[in-house]
Image (cartoon, rainbow, N blue to C red):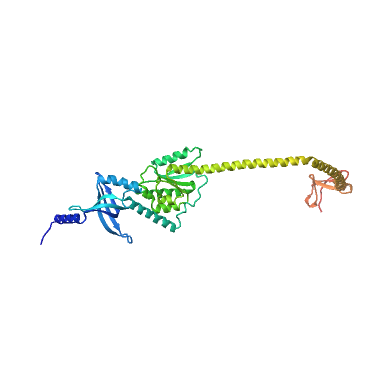
Length: 412
């Protein structure tokens, strides 16, 4: 029985693989655990999942040597607009190798970006189809952009050149329109784009009454960082956002999923500013047209009214003479009627006063005394009840002519 050392066995495996698989092979796989070291070599893992269960069914260690990686990475990212990172599907040309110490691995020689582009396009289509089936795909597009979009919530990195360009363009617009902008900071590249932008949108949603529209802009970053804008959660949030969303994330070749659901998609942050300025210009131009129409209507109305006044003025003299004559006759008749009515009323009131005067005279104390009545006074007050008098009280009895003073000696 032949006994082999582990090294000998691994060497046998290596020689067998080299003989059986001497060529280069194109392999479809998903990238996992992509990392580089200080020397520029890229180490990664290729995996394959079951499309139905999503369980891992194959795995292989991969290497891209520095001299290849320096050319392959920028070529791939420039072609796809996608970072060479874990989670993407690739079509790579590899050689199969086996090392006695490190084991089985694939060495990458080349890559086909069109395969990844196709997979990315498929994923975008799947997300858009899901949003359409849920009935939310075009909700944001259906919102009406305010006539004067002046209060703008901006989602961007505060240090991005594009954000500065956007603000400068708005502030220095040729017609002097005023815009109020407020920045809601977010990461616009890397693997936290989705989480960061969603957080900014939540903050805006809590103050949605303060804004007319939302602008999501990104400028100065690599096109390879756009994958964060191709996620279902971010697209669903933007599609259902209650304010119009304008995207200007600097991607001219293809629309991201976020671009597809936004109210308005422009290429750059500067173009986003120009879009808002143009909205204001349209409103200002329409207002100028309305002002011109108003001026014309006023002039036309004044001309018509002047014509009417001239016509009325020409008809006034004969009408006035007639009205004055009728008024004089009415005045004379009225004056005569008033005079007669006043005289009758004065006579009637005079007779009434005479009757009242006679009744007053008949009811006066002097008249009563003249008829034989007398008035008894005690301490200057009229005595109406004898029970109120006491013996020795002094009283005065007043007659028509004169009065007497008495002292009460007895009461009965």
